[in-house]
Image (cartoon, rainbow, N blue to C red; front, side):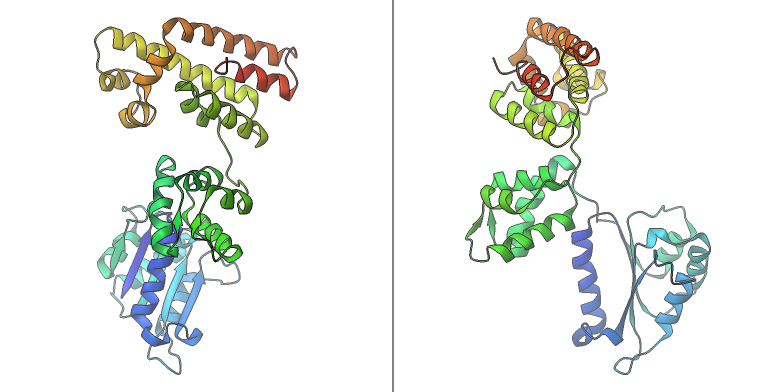
Length: 323
């Protein structure tokens, strides 16, 4: 049995590796002599390819063959990839799993793996905007614990779309509070520190909907996490111009989908998730023009030193929506 996993969803891949070991070894899956875990990044191994082939040909005292797992297989050197491809072309009888973040279908190794075993490519990380939904579905299933929607969103905002990291943090929460009936927002805030690098465009949705409370909260969070005021201004400026152009196209009789395409925007991201038609309605053209001028002035004020303190910049940005 030869299997290659392709994708960055580390949590789901971990579950698949556990299943591979269970299917391959049965009751011996916890026997360290019946399996070998190799890392393609291990500089102490002269040739990963030779280590894999030797491990696949080895036996333990309890099994006629070993199960071999190669992690971080993307790091395989060219010579190792070539040697493995040649070896796999003979379709060896072994129990081998290789874990890739990515592997081009045009490579010889990919073709050899496809001919000798199975390639599983359904391990892509959830998109950032779908991560909260993934958490809401995965946590009750894996940990048998209910979780609040607000807690899901906090974990998504704090940790990004690293599925393995999210589940490790939830496991830590449950070690701290094993008797909790439901994972709520207060609990995750207590236990989970934001680790993801925030980017300026994340504030656009709150700005577009003119949600003063959520906008001010996100603004404060971003500034506390190292996002510069100039970066936020630049993002809001581009977004406001997009909304203004979008509004002009809608007034010409275009549908939201057609207008988004004209601007080079994805219909789902811009119209459905971003609610651009509703944002345009809430702002209106005159106010958007005023905001665009104000953002340009703020950019000049900060760069010229007239608005140099953190508090003055936060107040100036907050005033765009909080009135």
